[in-house]
Length: 265
Image (cartoon, rainbow, N blue to C red):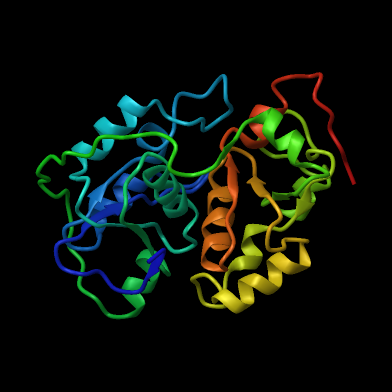
């Protein structure tokens, strides 16, 4: 299952708490986490170095495999990933594991906040993890680059998962150029959550995607600032019964080439 509300025995659990501009996730992990969970840092374990490819580019297969094995991930053992609660960082981990060929990976719906709200036990400090045997094999999920994102305009739907003011180019607190990819449709990832946390159900998600022009048989892609928030959009597409490709480099990659067009408004 893509989303789970409980963790079965024998599951590898990854804590990937991270927020753009927020406090580091590891101190939060050490203060309290789901029992048995290993911490994975998004900046070093779920992305390559900033530069070509954007702020959070696709990590090299060898680097990702090393990070996952160090966190105890094995190829045949199910994995559940979680973050603080909005599932954005968790969706990035989910997507990467799927892209690199892991057959059984899920996101804990509601994340750590939901776990606490349900009254479940936590533990503190780091967990001693037995190394896993996961071997990454790229290609398990559809992937877009800048050319692929541009080609999708007019033939499919390219979703921009950022806040409306960033999409319109009215505010850009992170990247040096404001605006969006011409022809993209703004569907903020925040609109995919239900009140109180967790993703909307399949019916509610389909309604959001339908309003954005997503249809059966139509190719769909998603991007954001650096490929984290948009991973949630891809996760939600799958929950809704659709499929979607992730533009990992996203806006931070698109604007690296000044010849690429920029739209505002």
